[in-house]
Each structure stands twice: as C-alpha cells, then as structure tokens.
Length: 301
Image 1 (cartoon, rainbow, N blue to C red):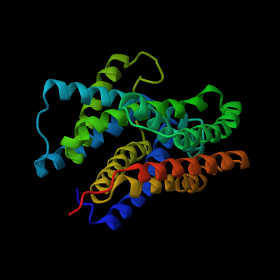
Image 2 (tube, rainbow, N blue to C red):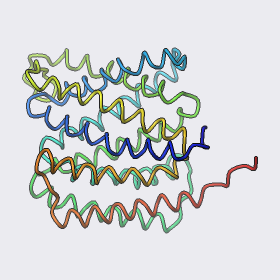
Image 3 (cartoon, rainbow, N blue to C red):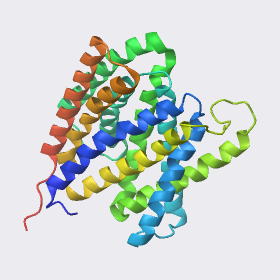
Image 4 (tube, helix red, strand yellow):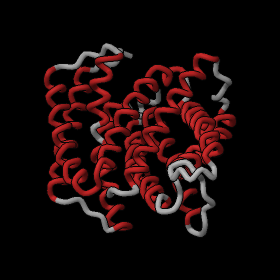
C-alpha cells in the first residue's frame, strides 16, 4: 500500500464526498421519468464501459475462478439491492435525509464484523452504535410521517451495503481496486439486464424500461459517470492512506448532499433532522476513533 502519501488519500476522499452526492442528484432527477431498474442498468453499465478497459490497460484484471465468480455475483446482488433501495427513496425523500439514514451503515458494519468476522468490539463502541441508531430514528420519524414506509429504504440500503462490505473485505486483499470495481459493475449488469428484458412491456413500474427523452439522457449518463468517478476516488484513497485516516472524511458527504439538495431541489432538513444528523456523525466519528486506537501498531521498518 502507498501509505506514504496520506495527503493524496485525504484529497481523494474529500473528492469522493463532494462527487458522490452528484450521483444521487442525477438519480433523483432521472427517477421522475425512468424506472429504478433502468437507472441501475445505466449506473452499472456505464461503470463497466469505463472501468473494464481501464483495468485491462493496467493489466490488473483476469478471469476469476468459479468460487471468485460466485463472490462477485453475490456482491453485485447486494450492491444492486442497496442502490435500488436508495434510488427508490430518493424519488420521494430529500437527498440529505436519505444519506443521513444510510450513515447508520458504519454501526451495522461494526456489529456485522463482530458477528461474522469475529472482530472484537468493546462496550464503548456498542454504546456509540446504539446512540447512532437513536440519531437515525430522529431522522426516520418525521420522514416516515411525511413519506411513509419509503423512509425505511435507506436503512435497507445500509444493511445491504454492510453485507457488501463484509464480502469486499474477504476478496479486496488479493484484487486491484480498479479490477474489483470493474467486476462488480460487470456482475451487476449481468444481473439487472435480463430482469429489464423480462419485464419489458409488463407495466411493472420498477422494471419496465422506457426510452429516455431530452435531458433525461444526461441524467442517466450523469449517474453512471459520477458513480464511476466517485468509486475510483474512494478506491484510490484507500491505496494512498489508511482507512482509519480517511474514514471520518466520508461524513463530509452529508454536508455536500445537504448543500446540493438545497441548491437543486430546494430541500432543507428540519431542525429535528439536523439534530439526528449531528448525533449520527458524532457517534460514527467516535466508532472510527475507537477502531483506530484498537488497530495494532504498524511494523517497524
């Protein structure tokens, strides 16, 4: 790992936090006309077209074995479910509210790491997770009252994404990040495209594709391009700086999402939601700090 360039890693992580909400804004706009399943196809299809040639040029991609292929397909299913649930929520909810609820994911990942990977967590991190969930409830409660059960979709996203990250930890050690993102996109495309073909003309709103018109072509392209750029940024950031260093910067995404949501959609969270966001961020930063302290010291040179 090129951990001797932490400033570059920090810069890339800040870039991710600034660019990633752009994907959500494009998806929210596209969702006014385009079914969620079709948005997913564009999101992962464009990522496949952009990253597969890059991985081939870098010489870091190779045909996986059957076992690795199964892991890629399972990861792809989880990221499809996570992204689909989040894009569905964005059709009805402000971007900042949806992202704030999603940010219970670090707490879920902490608990899953203990349950499935045998990682040890102390009572302080457990308490921080509980407080973070309480903060999420402050965001979910008014959203549920206004938007109904769709307010739970970002929570579904968080659960699916936490499982996705657990699987990623298993295979990321032996696979280049560009190749990993390329295989994820290819596997997700292979899963979603037959679904769209099957449901074409069915009238099932989520999966029955339509032909984009006018500016909706740009929205769909925007989803795929911003998704590819932001995920390349976070993958590269992890190569240049330790995860414990850059993880707190991901919470900048809430700030940029709030600003972008207000600028484009005139959506602004209410006071209770801002309190919930503050609690989630504080609890998440505490969990990250405790994980950093529990990490073994680096080996002596």
